[in-house]
Each structure stands twice: as C-alpha cells, then as structure tokens.
Image 1 (cartoon, helix red, strand yellow):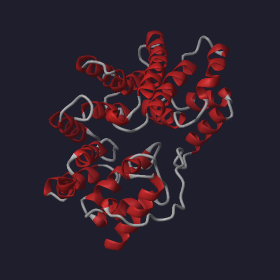
Image 2: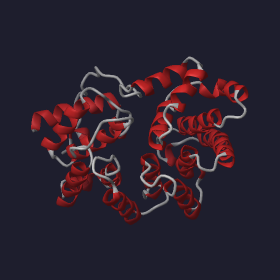
Image 3: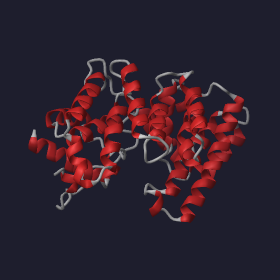
Image 4: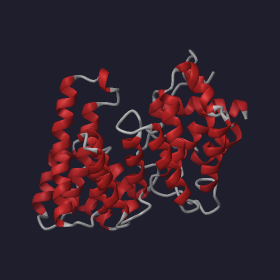
Length: 320
C-alpha cells in the first residue's frame, strides 16, 4: 500500500513552498508585484521575451496576492503597452481558481462558482484585449487555453485556442500542460484523448525538454481517479513503469537537461510518479535533483505539499 494511503503521523514540515523555486528572475517579479512596483515588474518581464520563460514567470506572478487591487494603476500609466493588460489577465485566471478552490464540483459552493465566473470574465476580457492588439502574443493565447476549462468552452473552441499557440511556438510547455488538463476525463476529454495527446507530445519533444512530463501527469491523473482497490496496482504495471522511465530519460535524466524556470514542479511530477510505481532508485535520483525545493503541484494532489514531499522523499530513501 502506497504510504499516502496509510494512517500514520505525518512528518513535521520543515520546508516551505517557494514559488520562485530559487530563480532570481521569478523572485524579483514576485517581490516587485508584492510591493506594487510595476516598473520593476515590467523590466523583469520585458527582459524575458521567450514564450516559455514569459509563461513560467506569469505562473510565478499568479501566486502574488492583491495584484488585482492595484494593477489598474499600471494599465493607466502605460496605455500604449499591452504588458500590464497581459499581467492583469494572466493573474486573474489564477485569482479565479483561488475563488473556486481545488475540490471537485460536487464539493464546491455556488457562491464560489459565481465568483469564479466573475473573475474569469475579467481575465478573458483582458486576454482578448491583448490578442486583439497583438495577435502574436503567445502568453495571452496560452492563458486563454488555461481558461478554456473554467469557461467550459466547446471542444472545437478549446482546440482552436491551443492551435493558435502552437502554430506560433510548437513546443510551448504551459499550453501543452493546460491542453492535457482539458482532455482529462475529469474535465471534457477521455482517457484515450488524454494519453494520445501526452504520447504525441512526448514523442515530438526535444531531448532534455520538460514536455515528456505530460506522460507522467496522464498516469497520475488516471491513478488519482481509479477506485482505491485498483489505483495502487495500476501504478505497478509494466506499462506505467516503462512510460515513466522512458519519459524521464528523454527529459530530466537526459544529459542535455538544464534546470531552468519552472522546472521544479515538472520534475516533482516524475518524483511522485516514480514513488507510486515503486521505482525507488529513479525517484531518489529525482529527489537528489530537487534538493529541498518544494512545489505546490503535484504534491497538493496528495495532501499538504510540504508534508507530502517530505514523507515521499523519506519513504523513497528508506526503500531504495
């Protein structure tokens, strides 16, 4: 039985979730937004035009509380720039999910859904404005992929949003991750669609890319939604083991892999997947890469992130 299913005292949390993952650019952006210093935030983002880097910085920005309270000042101060509108839109998507919470629909209150919808409208209005003014803004289009689930857009519309991203940046990490979530059975897809998309993206990924984590995510999604009596056995199948090892060898275990912006939660997906599969040597290798860096995702899937990370790492080291 996998340890997260056992009734035992959790390890005392000693670590913290740092949304910057030790990256100086992410930390500078988080600090600037927290201090309502839009000039510094602008400079950090302007210095990172790469679509993947920009998206991963926007993930960090989404963790900052209170941005919606003052972002209008930046928009008004630089009316000719789409950047403050982009920050408002991307942040509002994260802000909306905070209102909804992470529980399944049957455990979510109606007032949460109403606030979720209100905030998503704010987000999409801003993102649509950016796209209207700059059709090639990949980041705005990526967050429209993210909002597809919350807005419950049709399958055709969701696919069109994703296509607009990848025709401009074919290997966009965050867009692929969000597309995969749309295709999960818990949202609007099927198991066949979820795995088909993950396998296709993994096959097309360059060596050392983070994209192969999509295959690990797909297996974890299936594990999480199987009945308890089936889920642990599923992760011990040869198919899962082969997939996880092959994906990691093409990604974080590849000699060309270099830790960069946003790598910690993606590597953590492999750590969790390997532990569930009881591939303890591979899991230990990932934990050695991670050190003491804890991310919200994917550990929040199995409890408090710090407790889950610590317990997982300890169990892996005990059994390797």
